[in-house]
Image (cartoon, rainbow, N blue to C red; front, top):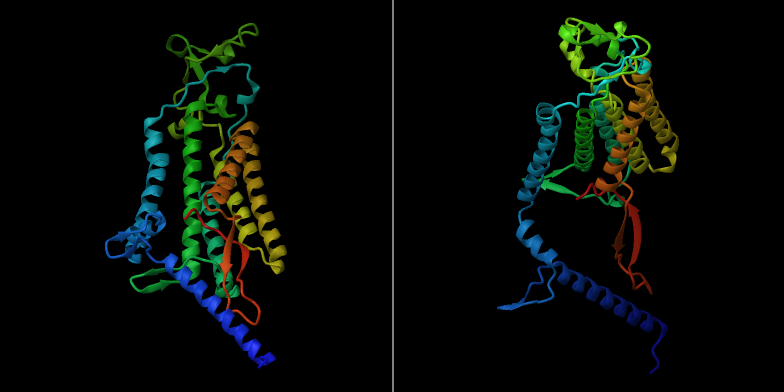
Length: 360
């Protein structure tokens, strides 16, 4: 008896279901701990990943807590070195000067961008920016299309935007700490004098400080002087301590790092077509803030032009390093999808999704 078209269709569907069930069974077996094939038998081809997952990832609470502790210790070590250890242990290079050096004869001007503005631009603004972006993504983008890592701690599922904020801000603070370490090392090793050096130091040398630049003639005004001292009560000790830390500009480096990080972050996270103008506007605003910081350091004679350029390059490179090589904001991760087969659809499909791994 010749089979009908309906029976052929049913046989075809049964075959598809069997193939799909076999595929799922095979993947479930490989996802399990395949070290043991039976009592007392070991699989020599078992992967080290499954061994690691059994030993280290058995308790999700312990894994998450250990991750938090490790991240905290790393950040504590970096910021402790940048803000406490290096300033106390490093000695600044004692560079000399020429009395005819016109680049050191600018008047001292009070900067109109203070440490409060720097704190807002480097700490408060990036934190608020990341929080708002991740909350918008959690509200707009469906969770089914987001390939994000989920966390559960003591039975409580952590919201997606909180985990994403933690990872983004953690990478940002890591890069900022490295920037501060690089700034501190460079400032102490170069010891470049600031443009207002003569105005606040009024250097003297010789027996009991009896000679100064005003006593030199035109013939010996080009002498390079290293052994000198600043006039007493010419300026405060804090200001005199900063006079040798001109290169690179720490203000510009940290500001450019913060704004550069936000520019890269917005490019990676605000990729929806209807957010193009918003993304471009935010990136333009961040770039403008970085340029304002550069212009302020030059106009108030706090740093030389080359100091500002070097600081901007350092901050931009650190932002690029943190977003591309640490956070992996622009990495395309291949994720396989295996939907329920329909009719003749037997094989699953694979797609590419841009997702931030944040080094984890």
